Length: 440
Image (tube, one colour):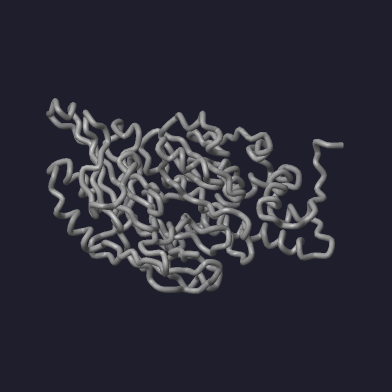
């Protein structure tokens, strides 16, 4: 199983805060804080799944760089790439989302086979009948891991602008590829095998990988403000490893962040949890060309700008349209209702956020950041649930009571369906003795 990248911090070894924040990103309307040229890049370390040990520094590895353009006659097409023999089929649509012509600039995270991609898109008006008054391009890269892609956001933004103003000049991109290209080692007896895919942490990994996707106000902060109490609904679906599809019109970048935030809700650091459940896979942006690959996935979180997906119910369990979270499965309907325990969790989360913001304002201490608070809030919540379930399953009578549910921060009645689904999904052998209020 691959390691995941987390920031180096001694506090990790004592259950304290993990430092985060920073990096490059772009919100829909505001410009982000960028790392200054002389500011050192954050040091990434590898954390082995389920352990609190710090490993080796993760190396940069770019396996492809490409330019995609919109041709008025041919549509989206790959204009240039290195290496020239790499399979980029479909990337012309992944890196220039459907509806992108309506925005001036955007960025997109996506998955292509075993790789993750980041592309920056820009749209420039031109006085050209041949180009129908607009020139649109995307410049992107592929890597086995998305966790370090953020480092190249600023470079890609500059390069797409350069490609719009000086089409056909690829020397900077070629030099970049020569400097950053990864060496894909062949595995024993598998000549030319593909590298491992670094997914988001599975349920039995310790911490979240750093994606450095900072909005001006913080990625997680925007996520909480956008969904409000409904993040508790998304939390339950994420913990159950449901197929979650988020629809939104362009720009896509901010929606890719919601995919990431949604996956961060389901972290658990207890050993022995999740052996029978599929990993949560962030597909980020998907389009109709991904339908075939989504058909075989049992768990994922993705976003799209294409409304046609809503009709294809066989592809998802949960559909998020703007702020409306819905499911077509009858047995999941009870999970859409906010209960008293959910409201209490949301109140505590906001209380902790306010305390953090106060300490930042008064004391000027920006470690930990809001991203860490958000991730660790749900990590601790999840750990509490599974710790209790494991203890009950190891007891003599294996009986899970209403008191246990309250101790886990759940509503004995409102979360009864969620608990039953959780026990089944994770294969935990306990007997639920919480009465169903709907039945005599």
